[in-house]
Length: 87
Image 1 (cartoon, rainbow, N blue to C red):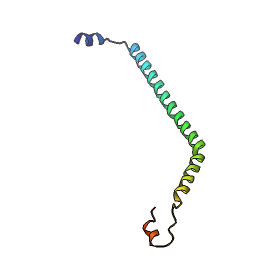
Image 2 (cartoon, rainbow, N blue to C red):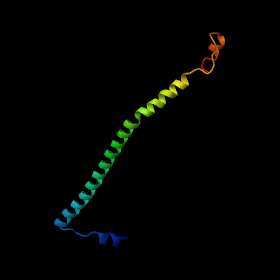
Image 3 (cartoon, rainbow, N blue to C red):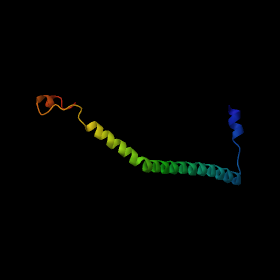
Image 4 (cartoon, one colour):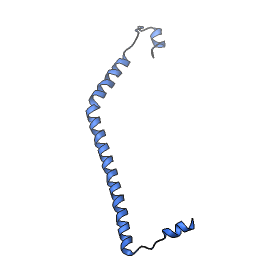
């Protein structure tokens, strides 16, 4: 185990260190820009689908609301209607 750590401790020159840092930063920047691009593309996709599907979904919800608001049985104005009103 100690030999592995000893082999990994290589002194880098100033120029090699700057080159290594530049490579790491370039990879990190590329990953960051890819993530930002993916988030923006997903947001555009969600906004476009909400815009395209908004009207049909609203019509379905309106029809469902009207269907659920209709009474199934008419009991008149007596006491039975007050007891069974939630039905």
